[in-house]
Length: 160
Image (cartoon, rainbow, N blue to C red; front, side, top):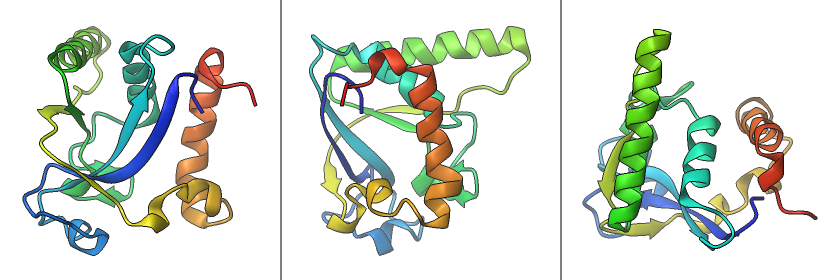
């Protein structure tokens, strides 16, 4: 929904197996993290804006969990593909942690790691929210996050 974003693909990264499945990743023992791959136009959307959306759309202070989703497969991780992304990501986290110190907030636990391999998730994960809006998980977990991003980043949204 952001200007400049060409594609968003669900998948898995960080683990050792060659072709992980959702069932394997969901055990929490594969070393993989559930991720999305974002392809974007840097002339239209700065990497820093993607970082802002990323940190607003989830709780980066929770270690190996997101709300009631618990396990290492739910870790907050930025898998970078360029040195620029690594530097910008780490700087952004450092700035957030410095402001958290003065505000007495929890530290950011997001890891910044090189993307060695991205594995596409099974097809039923694509457009999951769009295809399952009536599902309880979508209504209670995903929809509030989407609404938060739409409100905070209205200036970055594509015009439909």
